[in-house]
Structure formats: C-alpha cells, structure tokens
Image 1 (cartoon, rainbow, N blue to C red):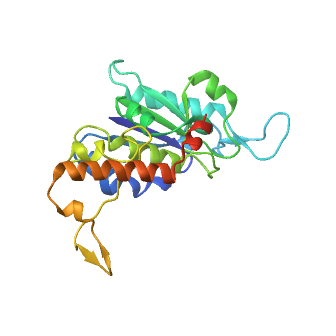
Image 2: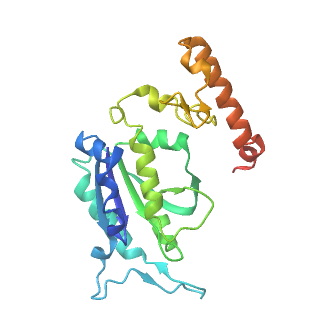
Image 3: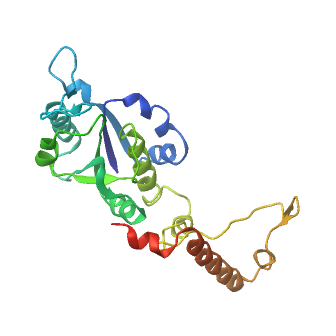
Length: 234
C-alpha cells in the first residue's frame, strides 16, 4: 500500500514510521509511506500557507493554492501509468468518525493520500476541488491533523495481509467483531501479588476457554460501552 501524508510539519512524523508495526510493514515492502511538506508548494518567498478568513473571524485558514499544488505533484509522482486511483482523505473534525470498519475499508485501498489540516481549517475550495473523503478520529480538538494521520496509518497498516504474523491476532482484537471489546488476557506468572490467572485458562479445555472469553468480552463491552452510547453516535 502507498500512503502519502501532506503536512505543514513533516518533522512530527520523524520516528513514527521507524518503529513497531509500521517499521515491520515497511521492511516487508507492504507499506510505502512518504511525507510531503505543503510549504514546498508555495509561490512566494515567505512560503505562505495560511491567510485571514474572508468575512472576518479568529485565526487563519489554510490556503487553497499550495494544498492543490502539492496534491497534483503527489498524484503525478506516485500514480504510475494512470493505473491505480488514489483515495484522498481530508483529516478534519467535520469528517466521518474513524472506526475499525473504516480502517478495514481503507486497508483495501492501494493508495491513500492524507491531508493534515491546521489553523482554523481549510479553504472550502480544497473540498470542492478534490471531493475527498473527510475523516475525524474523534469529537475533540487537536492542534493539527498529524496525530490523526498517525492513528489512521497505524490502524490501517496492521490490517494489511502479511503485516502481522497471526491472522487470529487481528480477528480477535477489540472492535473486530462489531462493537465487541476484547476479552481479558493473561500470561505468566500464574499468580502475582495475590492475583491469579482464572483456572479456566489453565484447564486446556478449548471449548470452555472459548465460552469464557466470549462471556468476558460481552460483559466488558456492556460495562464499558453501554448500548446507548452507540445509539447516540451519528
């Protein structure tokens, strides 16, 4: 999978892609990620990427020209032979809420272009020109889209076939079965400071273990994610 990140602060991704699962995915050549500085596509000597909003108001707005110039360059550079079509994603609080279902959808896309917002948001003509998928990682405010881009890339990459060693680890994770949370996990030692691993997990009876895990997953979900919270989500 190709992933291109368009940002005003490329240094924020310095060590992210060199560690853990993202490093493994890159070493296996299953993930090809590149970071582009939108400031490199400005036309003035001050490398201006923002300006005051028309109509007044607080803050600054990201300018349309450098963003569209950057996108055009990335597509011309990275889309080979006109074959694959890139999916452009705008990271914004106004977007569709990112979840495991969406992560799975995006993991099947061969080329993602993630545009990180900053300041008070984007000039609306960026949306009109690109018609991107708009995506939010939650109902809270971040300084910019860089943290959101990292979350999306991590969640999507681990679902690419061959990245993780075990298909079962992906299949049994939280949210892989609808809204269900994962069951409690234990490893050695069997007893620590008076806390013991449940006997059923040491029984060797796989059917009882499966039933216990299913029950614990259901109870944990009901306790930590009450149904009404999902009903309220847009």
